Each structure stands twice: as C-alpha cells, then as structure tokens.
Amino acid sequence: MKKIRSTAPTVEEAIEKVIKEYDLKDDEYTYEIVEKGFKGILGFFSKEATVDITIKRNFYARKIKEFLLGIVKSANLDVKINVTYRGKTFYVKIKGTGIGKLIGKHGKTLGALQHILTIFVNRLSDIKLNVVIDAGEYRERRKKQLETIAENAIREVVRNKGKVVLDPMFSFERKIVHEIVKKYKGVRSYSIGVEPYRKVVIEYFRKHARTNR
Image 1: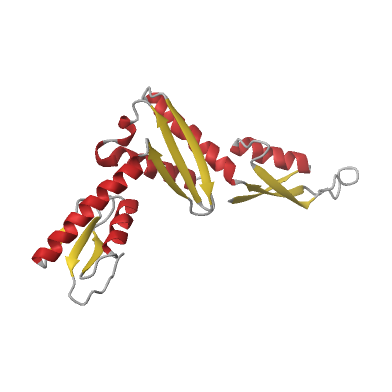
Image 2: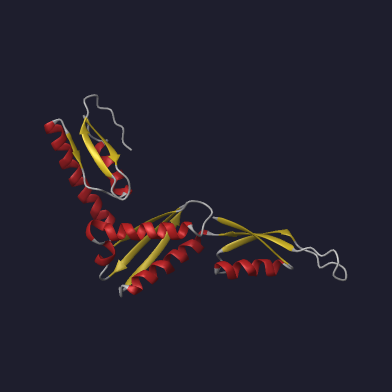
C-alpha cells in the first residue's frame, strides 16, 4: 500500500527509523534489504544500509479505527468498531447505543464521517484508498427506502411521460437508484450537480436506452 526507502548506518536502524515515524506494529510491514551497508575501514569507504519497507493494509485498518474512536469518544458514545478490508476498500461497521448521532438526518453525519476518514487514510497512502462506513445497519435500511423512492418516481415518470429529480444523495445511494432504474423499460437515469449535492434524475425515454452514470 505504501513503500518507503530508508537509509541508516545499519539495516536495523533504517527499519527502526520508519517504525517510529509511522508508528508501525510488528505485523504491519514487510521489508527488503537493498544494501546491507558497510562500516568501512578506519572510518573510510563506509556505505549506509538501504531498506525498502512496505506498509501493509492492516496498518491502515488500525489507523482508521483509532481515528474514529477518537471522534466517538468526544461524543461520549459507547460503540464497537470493526474495520475489514478487501482490495483498496476499507469497510467500517459501528455498533452500539446512541449511534443515531453518528448517522444524522438522512445519513448526512455518516456521510461526512466517511468523507473525513477517506481523506485521513489517503494522506497515509501512496495509492487511492476507499472507506465505506456503516452504523447500525443503516445502509441496508436506506437501501430499502431508496427502492421505494425509486419505484414511486419511476411510476410517476411513466404515467406523466416526464421526469423526476430526486433529493441529493451519496454516491452509493445513487448507484442503488441507477441499478433499480435499469430494470424498467421506457425510463433512464443520470446524475447532475456536484458533491455533496449531486442528484439523480429519472426521466421518460421513448427509445428505451439507458445512460446511467
């Protein structure tokens, strides 16, 4: 996920320097010796050791959890946080009492937390990472709500042969709506606006083409 080249008089010192700088645990990195180094003769011709250290994904999972725990602690919430990962995406699940504060109205607080965590973890990485956060199974409940919203909008669009602009949604919500629209003939969907106010438009389409995005 991130590779760091470190140099020092010895291999051990080169590794230790990175461990301290990034607060690494023993199982959160691997290393490859590029140059063992040479003390030289009577102080002459010495050469520093060079090591390539690769930070593993469990380091980012731990940092995400620690960062989020700091946030919920300030809100005096008693919750449990579990962070897993698959590929470049980290999945955060929060369970406990009073997590409604973390979800917020229409999931806006949860969305903001996800945005903050994504920025945080990407500052630690060389490649783009994604964070998906869920609290109290909110996403599953929201999915069912979106299905109802989308189906009602589709019926209205077909009945009036017009279009409906839905309220602003997060990207994962828009994706759900687009997938639902694909199941129906005579309608199409697309997104307009900029984050965090991006919306889905569902409209009547005579040729039955689909241009979801």
